[in-house]
Image 1: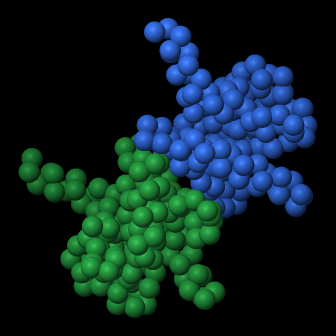
Image 2: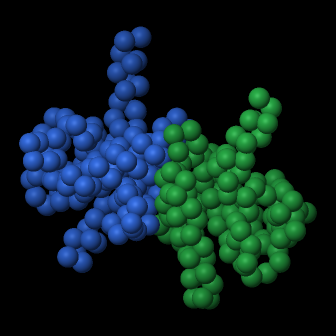
Image 3: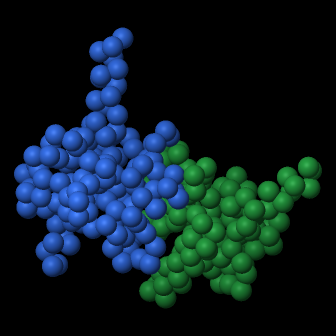
Length: 139
Length: 139
């Protein structure tokens, strides 16, 4: 259990550094796993956008999000004025960022690595670098 | 030293609850005192505004902010897209919220309790309740 928490914390810290490296401000939220309020793991922002991110690091081929976690992420994001995102770091893969809609199943929320690759955004896409490249293609 | 940290943490938690009670989302930032990046103590937001708050709880009659703390608060706030605020909880007083400009001295940033009462906003004013009342007076 301690090892799993450590793995999650390390993944979160890695993502925080990635945001700062791209000139986004980013921080881990204190007590995100235990506070009475609905809290995401990370908040990231630039002058235009704010992201509330629930982070998962896993060695499995599939990642699940509980319905209550999903609800809390949506609630916080709506109140704070942020976009709700799930960030998943499968072992030996880069980060994939998913909207909850893309993880919806009959029973709740989950996604396999292969579907995360199909439906998810990689980090550069999440922060809009990919989108700028695509826009340039049209100009 | 431990006692001072505890006092600060308790004050931060009190302020977090005050925001949630007024339907603002608010969280404490992990590692705000120790992270390599410039981090505020609290982030609060609603659909319109985002506040980055450096919190101080003191038994003295005067509160000082170091120049480096002030710079970090400004830097984070600009990057994240938030308003930078200093929240001060003098013993047996309510919270006062100050802009750094109102704390500027020749040597750095500081403010006395009496000046905080003159120049600071109380909590309801910070989140705009006072402003709405004033606007109503004009209509």
